[in-house]
Image (tube, rainbow, N blue to C red):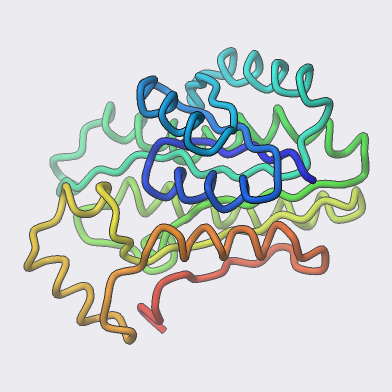
Length: 236
């Protein structure tokens, strides 16, 4: 049994990740403001939820310290928490840019930086980051989001090379258009249908399909530095 820390556990993909890993592992997921959703998820899966603002290094360090004190070690870190923004580039303010980068990219750095020392000391661990198909191909009116998710890809590839000798794998998934509130709340039915048509499998992905891909990367000890598209062939 492994100890798995998942950031952003109350979103659609985060909840699917928690459910997938909780089948056999000890799961701790983080949340920022969704306390009631956290409570319901912990009751459903018999796992643990902890508050954490991944853009705040003090919040991250306190939460990780508490997890290590309680469980002794973290075997798998899944950096899943993120926010989206659809806005034309010329309407994107400096504040918009900073918020997207702080959460989606700097947040990955903050949590990984807090967790990895304990993995290095044990010469074992797996980090899986959740990027996006837009980090690979870019998306119109999502420049800040695409840039942040592209940064996660570069972060993943570089860190994998640095931590390999410590027995730690670092990989990422790049989900395509997933049937989740992050997409359905921002895109019209027509836009979602068009994106489904552009996907060779001709449908949206499911959060559970992303979760299964993350588990596969976390468990395979000879895969590192890879970006796995969970996108139905989008852009391929």
